[in-house]
Image 1 (tube, rainbow, N blue to C red):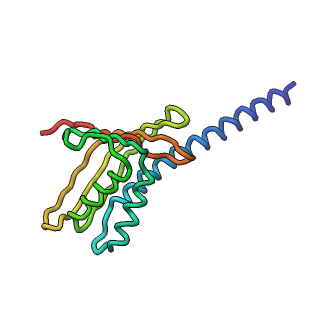
Image 2 (tube, rainbow, N blue to C red; image 1 turned 135 degrees about the horizontal axis):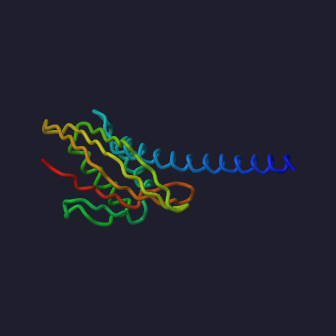
Image 3 (cartoon, one colour; image 1 turned 90 degrees about the vertical axis):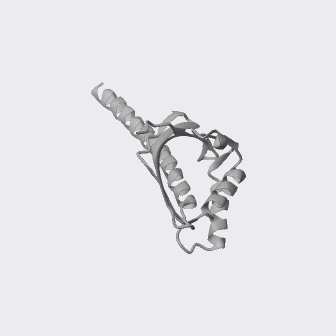
Amino acid sequence: MVKKIAGIIFAVVFALFIMQRCFLDEKQKIINQFSRLSSYVSKEPGESTVQMALKANSLIELFSDECELEVPHEFLTGIYSPQEIAANVSRGRMMFKNISLKFYDISVDIKESEKAFAPATVHFRGNMTNGKTVEEIREIKAELLKKDKSWIFKKFEVVETLKK
């Protein structure tokens, strides 16, 4: 009888361990998508046209067919295709000598097996071709969907923060 109870306890603990491991792996996959996004948007001085094109093509893989952008500036708010996002990012990158995009404090919440929410802090820093430096820190809420064993971005919402 004691062996049966010990066996059941072991099976439950083992099952919980496996579930937690799988769940953590999914969270890491989502965090990795933020890293990929950062890498594809960032720009090093002297980046070649070929490198820029490769990043733009890779960027397309990160977004759903319809990705919603919700920002305080209404002219940017809308639904974009992955190709439109890549084209807009490429146009924006051309205005800068270098760009650094980093995501911090990513908190992944998987609601369903194929849907996740991930609020994060975004730090953008870039030196424009005209010599100006742009630096922005924003809070965002991202929504991701799981498609073909990979997580893709479905929505980005820039959270309005209090201004001085």
